[in-house]
Length: 140
Image (cartoon, rainbow, N blue to C red; front, side, top):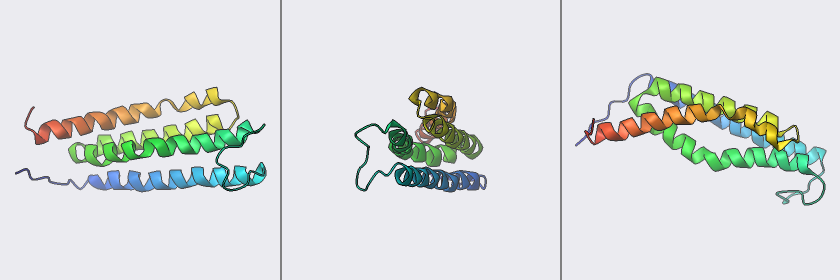
C-alpha cells in the first residue's frame, strides 16, 4: 500500500488549474466575438468560404481543447511529485497557449508558433509525472 502525502504547495497546482479554466473561457469568448464580427452563424464550426481569420480564432481554441486533457492529467499528477515545478510548468503552458492564440489571431497561422515555448511547461510536467510513477513503483 502506498500513502500519498499532499504537500501544502499543491495549492499552487490547484490555482494553475483554476487559471487554465479562465484561459479556456477567454479563448471561447474570443471565438464568440469573432463569430459576431464575421457573421458566422451557429452551428457552423468552420467558415467554408473566404473567412480564414475566423477559422484561425476557432482553431486556436479548438487546438487548446484538444490538448487540455493531457495538460490537466500531467499538472495534477505531476504536482503530487513536485508541486512547484508542475505549477510553474502549467503556468508556462497557459502563457504559451495565450501567445499561440494571439499569433493565430493575426490570420497568419505560421505566427501561432510564437507560443511553442509552452511545450517547456508540458515537458516539466511530464518529468514530474514520470517521477511520480517511478516513486510509486519504488523504481528509483
